[in-house]
Length: 133
Image (cartoon, rainbow, N blue to C red; front, side):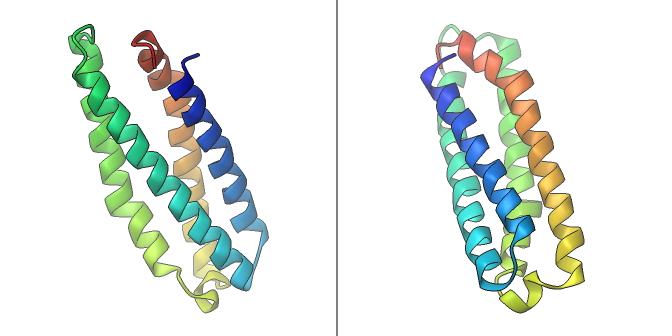
């Protein structure tokens, strides 16, 4: 495994831990965990975007990788803009994070992030490793 992919997988473990903490906490502790989750996820997305842009520009990156990498970036951007950022913005007070609506919304976000992490680790990261990441 490349060191970049190792770093990404470590970030995934931290995100998974924060997802569990959000799910098991209430009130201000939940807000604090959500803020940490937001920071971790958005930072991770930024790092992935940077590495993938660099990888797309590598001369030994084949056309198939470049296409899948571009799709990866677009999907990630769409997820962030249409789901993650609105979710984090909506649930910024302890009154809302302890309500019933939060439970359903959080379940959707948690599932989407878990699915995305699985996809990245199983399908996309092996392609990055071929390019020495």
